[in-house]
Length: 534
Ligand code: ME8
Image (cartoon, rainbow, N blue to C red; front, side):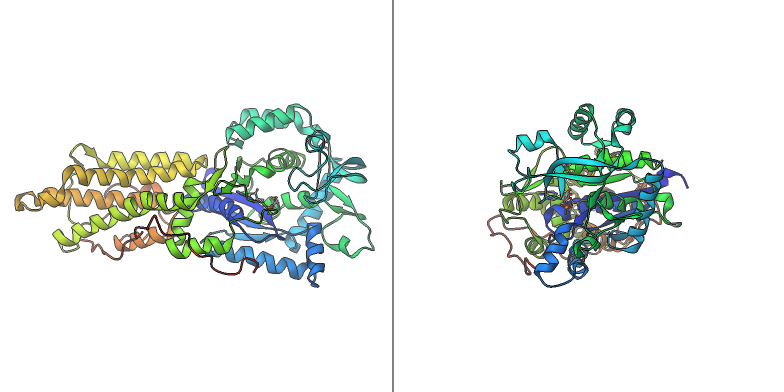
């Protein structure tokens, strides 16, 4: 099997101290849409997400509650798993950094890097941001008045004897790689930021923290091989997850990952430190590090201090009211995939729901099935080989949309690919409007035209539904059922499934309830469902 037949996509592994919120769900949704699309395309796909559990604050949070760190981590990792199941994510695995399968690999990777001299012991002095568990550069510290750029808490000067990774050694190779692979860091604005910063010079980075072996907290994490006085820095531990999860005989062929989908906050680790570590380990680099921007809420930044994160109870409220697929659609198509942030605003949600789903996809599907019910007793009519009518060359139209969606998904342009699906639906609307089958049906001699028109509409909508399925699996599977064309994902590749003419005349077409009932633009925001803390 060649590389292009496989697809490996990852999300960040999330800090287990937080409750899942829209940000975690968004990144994981993007990876889910990509994974689903690739599976449908016929690629052998592996989609990984998980939790990052060895942070110092996990020990503190557990102690506050009088439970063990692992009990606290279990509880919260479970909350992420549940949230992701509610949103119908299709991850193939969920890695937790506290699992032996991860810890054992990290130990082996670090040993190998010590062996080659890429990890060595040295002294480090810097500004420590305790709230983020990371050092910030002298420049950043000054710019933020020696306070954390994220939480505003004071930075402290710390000196440590640490193990370091020889990042400086790889700067030139990394720059050359970024130049030779224009999509390696996306979107482009992010790539330019990273390149600019690399050019100012790369310093070796600490990869361990000194610990007191007698301190109970020290046992939380992965100890440096052969040196119990040091623990692997949580960020280094976490980055290895992308490799450790597939570093087994049955999964090894998935490496390198095709895409690491992340938020802009963690770009440096993914676009600079991680690729250099991979070079040091003599491993191939991922195809793309895609760093999206942030969701904000009704025009305001979401933050822990403001306590206004759009949380699971709120998202669940939307899912209950509009359906899981409507929430997935809004996030996937209106989200901050580019270099600017996106606003989650209730008014906008309802507007897009009505425009894209109720009035377009749902309306076109019910209109066409209603006419088939009325004029052909619910059995799909025969177009008798006519594929071009009233200036619409349907095989060409649908083929172009599918080709375009595939090309866009290959560079993770998810909103663009979804618009390709929607564009077919809009063409169907325009076609019905232009040809007026409901008027032609009044004339018995024109029933052949009506049959051709309705076959074209149903077939075009079937092909649109294949593209839209990645974002809206549940509703599109319902559409497949109604059109009598259930799809076993991965069995027949998308290009073949999307060939014109696969719908068989005579197939019963079910009417059913509206796929996306129209929403009242004046109705208030849905009531949150469930306990925000639990
Ligand atoms: O950083 N909008 O974990 P984390 C969109 N454990 N996405 C958002 C967001 C927002 N407002 N807020 C957060 C960590 N995110 C580390 C990662 S990976 C080896 C280790 C998303 O729980 C976004 O994907 O803080 C961001 O990168 C991620 O949550 C940070 O999750």
